[in-house]
Length: 63
Image 1 (cartoon, one colour):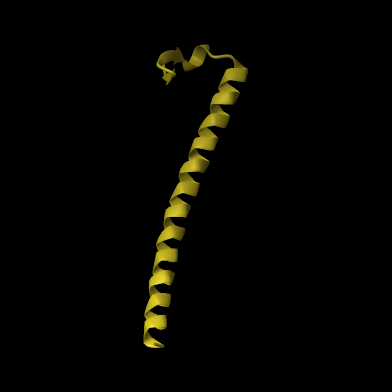
Image 2 (image 1 turned 135 degrees about the vertical axis):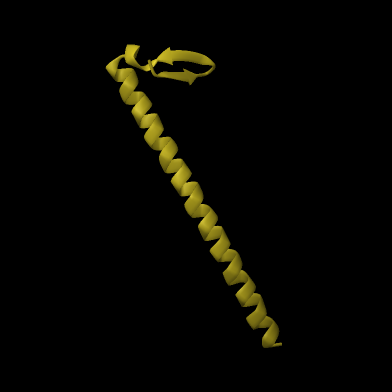
């Protein structure tokens, strides 16, 4: 029987109410979205750093 641990307590998934299962699904969707947004932020930070370095190089050339 599949189980899930929340705040250190283990629950059988099959014994959860429908409302609890729906909340769990919503929580999982949120966690997936957060992970996706964190990955996107890492990509954007990398791109920003590259743009900043390119700008510094251009400014140094114009001095």
